[in-house]
Length: 100
Image 1: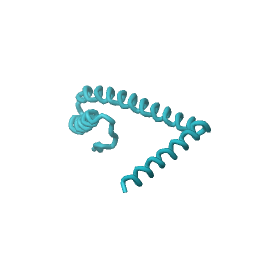
Image 2: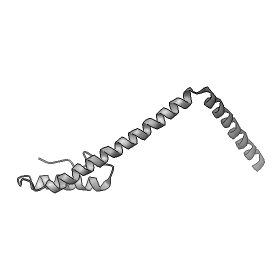
Image 3: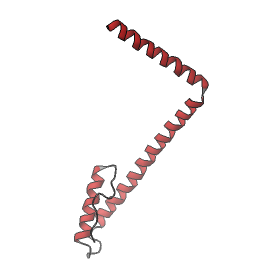
Image 4: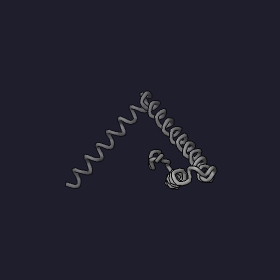
């Protein structure tokens, strides 16, 4: 049985190396019980860290989307954004006309 290196990738490159080493170990020492246990333990730690990192990324993304929805629904913020956009366009137009 041949494992496909690269079928699952972790965020941490070191964990990807450990995963590849584990696949090699399984392929070479598949008959020796417990020969790859240390790599398996390292992979377990990698998986836990990877899951925690994904949770943090998802949490950050969710918070960002919530802020965007709140901003999109708030008419006062929308009006201020409109004014800001007009000011930025005005400054851009002034800078292009003064540089000509």
